[in-house]
Length: 309
Image (cartoon, rainbow, N blue to C red; front, side, top):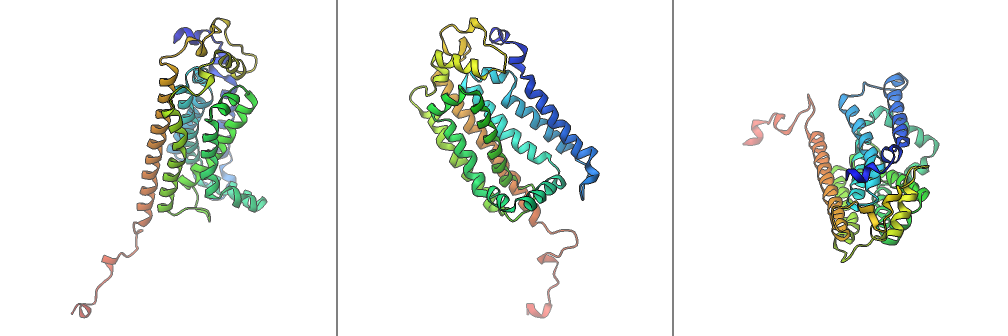
């Protein structure tokens, strides 16, 4: 493993371009939530928990779209699938939870004022339900996967599209703001369950296929193209790795077992995250149903003794 990573340059391994982008995002977050907080109506100090969510979201997105995992994920599909878990099932909900409600209110109000019809269409829960799961499933069709992996611009656009649709999907599961499109708690649980059902066929295809599906991990010629196209601009794959085998000799499993493990990791990770989210929704539901201070419950209402006779 060490020999594998030592053959790549610093730029190829650590994707500094992504680090710069994430640093800019962090600066914008600080600027909005701290320096410019007074310009937002009803603004409050951002909690330490939200700040932690944001930092963890940045880390998860870096692991999903960069870091040495980006290189290794082009040789081992298990690591590639782990990257997808980081990017779409960890980073997105963490980012949503990290943004203060007063910022979200402002953004939503501006969007509704400028393009109300577009807002109503895009924020429909069905769009969030179908969008990400359709893109995820289409991405894992073998021919589509191999073509996208060999086209750097298409690969980047597809990643952004999945990130955007994942944001919509998680928005309706977490409901950070009350709105006309908000699902009641019981329907939110059903919504989460439906997302788990829709992603299952793609995972099942990967797990139960009788042979390796993706030439990216089995065909040396395709793998060489993937490595050449998907490295950062200006970075070249080491010539000693082009030894006529897919993966450049970096693998701890045969391609079929690697593929099956990738599907299992995705399904188990998705189930864990969704079950945790159902618990989060249920906790919100219980909190919502609890009587507020000063409210009367049924047991607090005095009973007329005459009525008991």
